[in-house]
Image 1 (tube, rainbow, N blue to C red):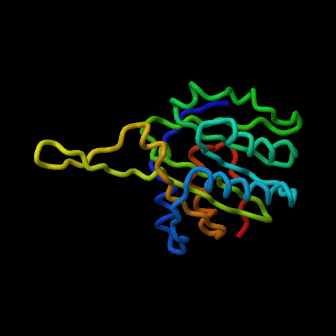
Image 2: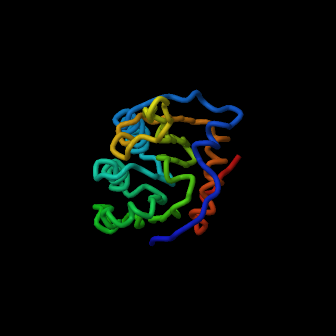
Length: 196
């Protein structure tokens, strides 16, 4: 299932501005993947049935982390959010080696102008555990000499990929609940039961 949805809100900005927001950390892709893996390891080790929303960098290694959790057939639902251009080059969702008893993951295609396009996240909700890990590609301006002056310009595409991420990790149920509410317009058919 693929759908194009509109979203006006940045998950990263929401978590960053939350009253009880955690401190931002600057990490590389390897560290972000390690944090994501640790959260999924917890779900696997404790056999926690959860609903998961994920928007991850391109590449099979990132999908494999979710696949490992899905193979247990305990996930309630997995939503994979993708940018439109990623949808064209990404492996079709059906080619992932998810267990037959697991409900197929839902692929959600974001519009080109979505504020989520520059973000990566893993949002987990269950009765036993909830977490939001969100990162944004750091957007840096580079000074370039133009005659006798310097101008601030964005780095070239290849240079941007090497930049670090600014991330937040929150286990605060209030922040996670609000983040899930933000995901509801993207995945309206199912919203997990959230007891207070």
